[in-house]
Length: 204
Image 1 (tube, rainbow, N blue to C red):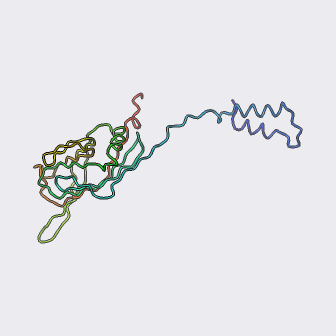
Image 2 (cartoon, helix red, strand yellow):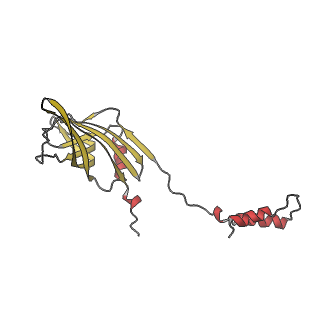
């Protein structure tokens, strides 16, 4: 099996004055064909990027909470979910469901299902609240456990039940009473998902 030094030496041995025999030239060409760096290289599958983002706030249709999001990544491998939630009415429990933009819904869920290890994932999420204290306003920050689920959900609005494609946030308020005692809450953070097939080799 030829190597680069062997091929380079054979090329250097060729006379520049034209007095090279067919045997000598054939020997160089044979070494080139047998060159190990020319062996077939198996290339990985191509990276297929995706990007979905809102152009404005999406209302949850129940509490007045709004969501803005950005999904970016590579199909079958990785997804980054950056989002901002503004919570207005905290008297209607602690579950917020948002429908993806119609142009995103089906395709985005298909991409996420190929990456996510499970439908429900739990994260520690930073939340900032603004409240009135001593005649003024102050900002407080908390870290709360949140369950995030992507998929189809049934929403009842005005007696009519419809199926939406989107994301649901189930938040554990700091009070532990199921109701967050402070309004004007904001979440702005990112979470990332990796396909378990890409980071875990079960054969080893």
